[in-house]
Length: 162
Image (cartoon, rainbow, N blue to C red; front, top):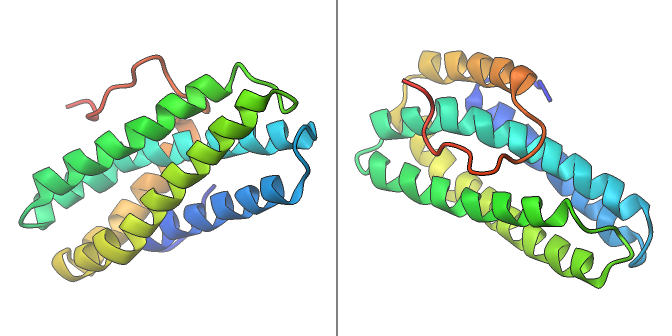
């Protein structure tokens, strides 16, 4: 959950953890109970990651990128889709056919999010933001993940508190 480094390194390490969990899910046969355990861990890690991004990454995107408001709004909207899938997934067990469908959708959404951030957003932010600001954001993100909820909320706020 806490990896060290600037905000980009911290969030990239989160992405790697989630991808590792996806690999464990994919390696197991449909109906295997451990798939649910891994899916629950994905949800827990992603929700903490997302809370930290909403609180610290997206405000920095708004501040440092020329089109930051549009970029942040799109990322928040895209991640809201994954949160809705996770909420639906909570009520299904690994031996339910709907579980497999929802896990597949979730993997697609999160993998798209990861690619979008790592290929587009992070490189732009690393050029536009001062290194010291990225380091400070890394520490803030680590702290936010320690206190963030582990389950998706009913309708989580899309913007951090003022």
